[in-house]
Image (tube, rainbow, N blue to C red):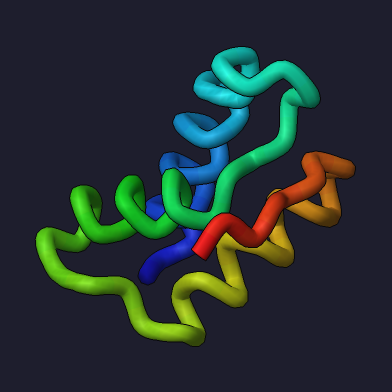
Length: 65
């Protein structure tokens, strides 16, 4: 993923965080957003980069696998 694509997924993840009571970013939701953006399953590297970007902005991510 490019940095712009990661920015887009991060923005969409943050926008949807209000849907959870604790305002966490859900791993499955991020995975679905990445897959929709890429039109394919995200690699572990893609997921790691998106997660790092979210966490650096202090948006906690839950692992609901």
